[in-house]
Image (cartoon, rainbow over all chains, first blue to last red; front, side):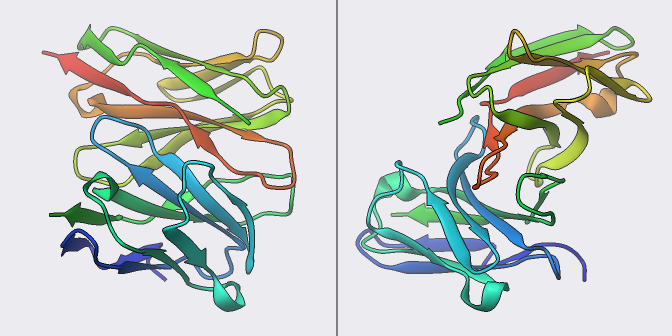
Length: 116
Length: 113
């Protein structure tokens, strides 16, 4: 296990198309986070899973965004009808710990989305 | 929800001098405060973290202090070196059911020769 992996690393898509990203967390990590990062900004929280349960979705996330984590392992983030404003780096992170005890979150290398 | 403010957005210090980055948080339920370093084109990586039951933590040239009353925490880097040049992010995580981690906007640290 070499850490959190994300696929693809880069994605260029035309406006209006749907895209799906995948994140494979570190084995046995029960928590999985999705963040969006634009140039010069900090990671912006999108959504969070504890095992297979999606516990929170940011208010910033429109209905075009959906995330899943079947069986509490890998996760997918889908963006429907992409817009130019969706262009960003999408980061996935995972951590392990019981509820109420946070530990280090390990980040993947991200998927850079460009909407043209 | 939690909101994390970070200052300054850019910081330049002479090599060998100290650097201080400050953050404030809004949710008094936050109990975990990690700091991440992100080098150009790379993923954020944890450099130090502190929990709310501790006021200060040190790891070699890096230290973090936490003031729960004022809801602010700071990162101190002493004897700065060229490899310290990067973007640093503070974050806070509330002791709630969701345990999500909220990041500040980052500080770009330049170490001048």
